[in-house]
Amino acid sequence: MMGGNLTSHIKFKVVDNFHRVYTVVPVHLPAVNHTCNYNSSDDCLLESITVTENYYDKISSLDTGM
Image 1 (tube, rainbow, N blue to C red):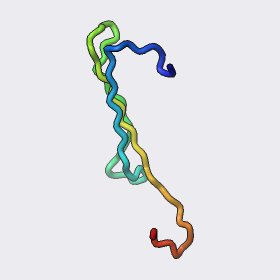
Image 2 (image 1 turned 90 degrees about the vertical axis):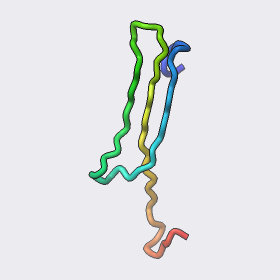
Image 3 (image 1 turned 135 degrees about the vertical axis):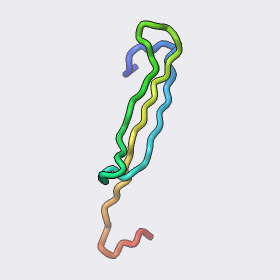
Image 4 (image 1 turned 120 degrees about the vertical axis):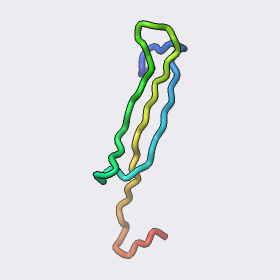
């Protein structure tokens, strides 16, 4: 497994957001949050939020998207 050996008490929540990322305001950045205590066997949540931008080049100057 790429992430190593993970125990069963770790839960994952993975979300992907689609935004324009080249704009300055508002800022859309990826984030990783967790509630894990590494010295405990209590349940914990690892949350990953990613950002994807769909960007397409124009085929020609007359391209209207249809």
